[in-house]
Image (cartoon, rainbow, N blue to C red):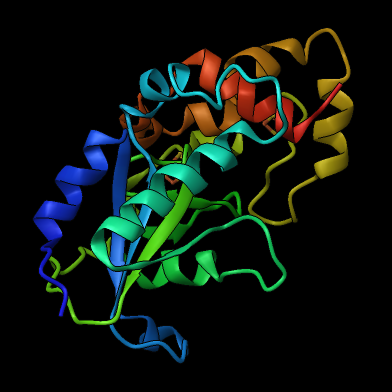
Length: 219
Ligand code: SF4
Ligand code: SF4
């Protein structure tokens, strides 16, 4: 029987720079598991903690994924939970389906997920599965996009890679990132993600964005 509570999980996550991004009962997504799934993402405190973590400066590949394995794996061991990750595999854990089912993340006009607290700076780092039902607050299930009249995420990209009518133009994005002008996105992060007003909740620094961009567009 799990003795932890949703509030205790939120506090523990925060101690590690993580944010509880939502929770769900996984059988509602067709998952054969019952119980409770708690989704964890990079919160406003993530980057300062990561910078002093051993994975940060060891020069090896995939430092944030390795940090996630260590930290979220440690939380799972301590809590009697099973850790799931959005990387590795196959099989691949259905994080997009889980995110949507949590009622706190939604499809945005760009096609990317938008989260009620961190906007388009959404970065799931893992999840904890508990075999028991842990009560959690009912989500609002109200997308921030519904009241976003100007939709700046659709106009901020210098090469128009995002459109409400067409799929994401990955080729145009990478071609732009190879130019001198593309340095702004490489250093400060995707302009479209930054343009979303809700993204401010992630308190994402340029250093953190640059690391993500380096993984997305290696030189
Ligand atoms: S900028 Fe507006 S429409 Fe675009 S993802 Fe953010 S809230 Fe939604
Ligand atoms: S990284 Fe820059 S070029 Fe690529 S989609 Fe985002 S804004 Fe557009």
